Length: 130
Image 1 (cartoon, rainbow, N blue to C red):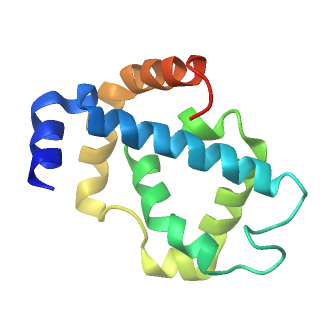
Image 2 (image 1 turned 60 degrees about the horizontal axis):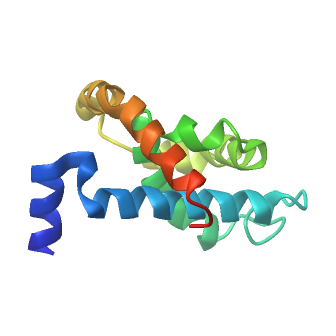
């Protein structure tokens, strides 16, 4: 774990662990789009479940750092699912995502790297199935 953290600190997006994380999110969002393609409202079906809930804090972070659109702009079913999830009163009440005092910093720092993340994702996609 220390090696992974050190690599990400020292190499940033060029760390193999960062690339693995981006590739994992690419696979997750591809699978999620395919799952939602049968017009179901939630991952398991018509009922909101732990399957949906488990993704919320992680995807909220991707949104906070301005990376989420890189995946959702080409995935309309997943984008609609995320919009429904964020509209739930429980999501709103829980304050999922970064704290208010962190939000601006997350957004600014993420914006600095979004072009590079886009490039890494395009490279991964061109290499084939992840």
